[in-house]
Length: 220
Image (cartoon, rainbow, N blue to C red):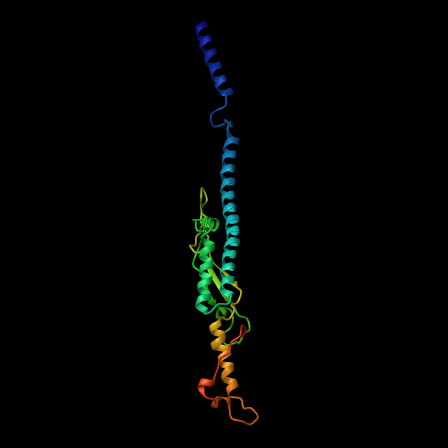
């Protein structure tokens, strides 16, 4: 009889002890660690997006300078329009050959295309209007590949492959070349002067061809 009481008492104590101990599901130890890891991962992902955005905007400013210096070289006067374009392309190649520009603008972060030189006024003015606004200069396409990221737990930052692609423009006009000045202005002025009468005498155009002279100064 005493043995049975002892057995029952032990079973009662074991049951009471088991009820007093928390279960595994009710254990909250380490919960703050899970929250910290989740918040840390989200913070890193957001920081990656902002880092890509800020670096891209900074590189766009650098690329804009490359466009500007190319357009500035194109605007300088030269013998022919073709030589003006060659001068601009040489300037572009010279700048992009520098280690700083080559590292940041020729990497997988941002890539610059080849410049396009010319008159783009038709894209800004109506075809039927005779606008005085002239858009002559350089264009350089850019591709900001840094904006296209695959962020952990968030996926891709873009859904369109055209995101990050744009065109930088710099319109500084273009000085008239020597050839254009000579053929388009000076020679035409000379032809008009030959057709003018002088005090009722014969036209200048009646003078012998071998006596005609073309005089060009340094301005049009």
